Image (tube, rainbow, N blue to C red; front, side, top):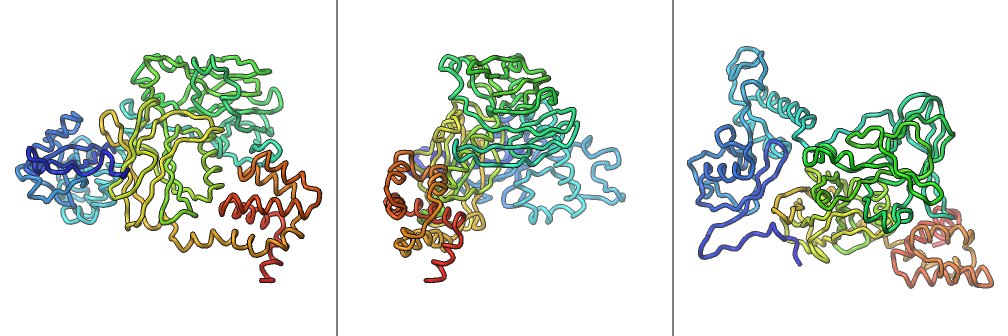
Length: 543
């Protein structure tokens, strides 16, 4: 199916020959999609927008299209509006927002200035050049400064879902790989008394003296019984923590529940959080000492396995807002441009698992912003594009929690001809509201020339197969790395180890990688370069 989805241009019908959809970006960062007729006046379009959001009143705002202010009495046809185009709704500055030193219509220096308007981030990027035609430079700078000041105030207000994360001193932990147990271990050296946050996991500790803390991610599904999973929902990563007793005064466990939004939807929802503490396989529940917008705090903790759970209530689960992430990866070995798009809770353990899997698939992350507002478990979100792309297996993504050990849900986006810029969107299937958007530009995507380089590993393995059979060493370490990268499984590892000579073991491994394809051979080549660089250099020089 094509990626136009719900965003696809509607074909004209006999009853409504000019019915199309347009996108309108508002001051608060909200985005609306509206069905309109080209014969609608700008005033009628404002009325439709006001029907969707009563705070956007026609009397206090104006619409911009291609940097031009749209006059209320003119039709959309007059402005040559096209399907899926962007309009920006700007709110004229209220006199009380200008401050006592800036009376309306008068600049700091007493000179007359033209009307000021608040504009969205999108407008600041795309409309700035055009706005300069109608605003003085000084007025435009003041409009921008006022907008960002109001945006910050909005983030702190009760009506906005944006949760401010704790700003704590960051500590970069040591990272070690336990290849025998296929896991990553973190070790943080805290310098003295205070509160410190791991810059990778978001886990924070309040300590009374210098201490070293060791921790790693664990898996909820391995420790929660089926009965517990029916009653409790993971609300953040599960951690295995080891530390000297009596030094940690409090632990801050990260969660992805939007408490500001949850409090608005259900005042008692914050009472539904618990901290799970597993001892000898048995779960004990503790009430958090305090909840912040990003973590659950437990004072005087004891350690083993700790994580935040949320009680499942059928009446509130789907209405509980969650912070989320959109991850996009380009498949470097694929033809043309192939992307994987994920929609996940803001859980760093899940994010790391996806990044690890995609790295094994020879992919690179394309950083893009998260959705505008919190999302809801159990809801379906649809991926679409402003350009002609192919989305498989389908354009719908259910928003849910899956363990880091499970395969995460994603859609594949195939772009045959990469344009200078391609827009991606995600809409809520319940109301067609746009909840996320991003632009892919030429600088985001690796050109096809880079793809050919990724095949050099396979070519190298084929050319030097005979020499590798006789000279490849450190087989045990190589096999561990291949298991870690999910290139081989335990049965295949045993098959290689079971051969009676080192040359035969090397031969079986090379043939196994060859059968698995180019990506497996590329992984083996990378491991050899890391573990036996002198052998690789010698073979490359000989050719």
